[in-house]
Image 1 (cartoon, rainbow, N blue to C red):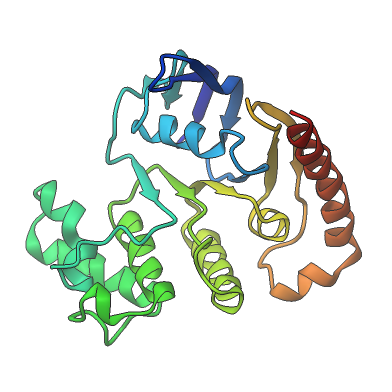
Image 2 (image 1 turned 180 degrees about the vertical axis):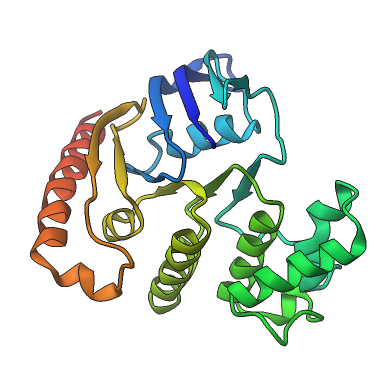
Length: 259
């Protein structure tokens, strides 16, 4: 069971000229076991900053993060991270990339190969195990990154706009792929995006960030049924959620423009 608590977390950066810039106002938020929560907000509002703090890649100026009651003070195997860029090791094959974390933890080779093969099949990369990242499309590289994160069996999967660099058709296919994996594996997911359709389609809960300095201004439950098919995006229920979130984001974008 994984439970993430973000309590009073804020972040202030210091510029090269010594000026303080507040990127994140104090945030209080919780993610329950098996939640798929999307974080939605305008560019530069602190979404990725908060995710990096949860990942242990950045330290908060105030507040703290607890995972199952234990403080997060740095990166850990219980948190799997997928970035927007394709963060694969170019000198390793697809299979070796997926096995990397398991190898570093000292997992026996036979078990490494078994888990890698399982997730290679899950993300549709059978036949590409011995290819190198540069030989694959962007979507296939991102599938590899997702398989690598899942193979380590993290308690929570952290995703920072993982499909943002993909073309629209590939992005939709990747959304369906990830959602299918979540429905089967029931992992806890915290997913950052600026795409309203994506935020609704993927989540059972959407948290909306304000303009910078960001804080969570609204939470919205998504009660669309599972398993989800792309056609749900044309239903009245989906369109109602989209209209509400569009107004929320538009208000924040206008507030940011005024500053």
